[in-house]
Image (cartoon, rainbow, N blue to C red; front, side):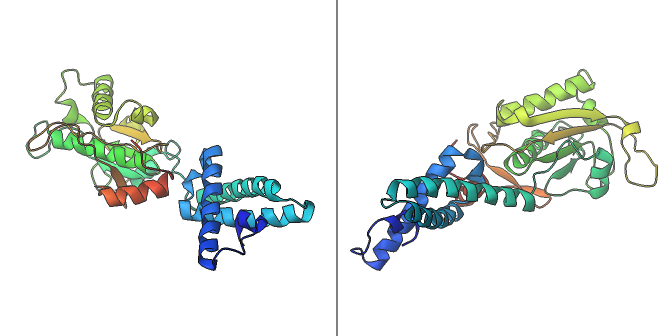
Length: 288
């Protein structure tokens, strides 16, 4: 019988019940392993249980070869082997799906590569280019984008860059500020993110500004775009991040939303999608 049940007499159990008991023992060992070593929680629960059953089989075989009464040794070896297998699985997953090095890629290279699951361009962070007025909807899009990057594998948001990757600068946003400088702009941006996402969630967000001489627009060899870019680097969050939208027409404040990156866009998940995404991204039970 797989897992720890191999060290116990299960001949009196019907085959179906014995199989369920073996699977339950696998989940129990997997739960203990995930509790003791949090870094393995990126492995899904079903995969964790399967690896625990494999670890149990090997552990029982070793224990039976060493002791006449192998139960406790079986439990210990099963746990140790399960943790080992989960660590290997975590390493393989990290190799196949590496986290984005949010601070490593130069801005010019991001402009050349274009938008992706980890890179987003926005022309402005507060000004509607059609009405020429401040638009809370534009600000909300910025918060949603950062929320999506936090809940994914991290990445970079470039403000002052249009969808084609051309630098348009921060002039439109700066025109709406009483003090049009980078210090005031960063203060506005951080206030927006902390009010929408919370202080703890935005601890892994860095903001910096790059001037024209440092940014190649990608429009031609050596050609430099006018304007300045605000670069927002986002590290992946160790826990789910929820966005609290501001109070607005037809909606009261305080209704949390969960956003993730999907391709080169950001989308809100339904509750069923959220539950599944949470299990795959962080493991364990859903919590706020």
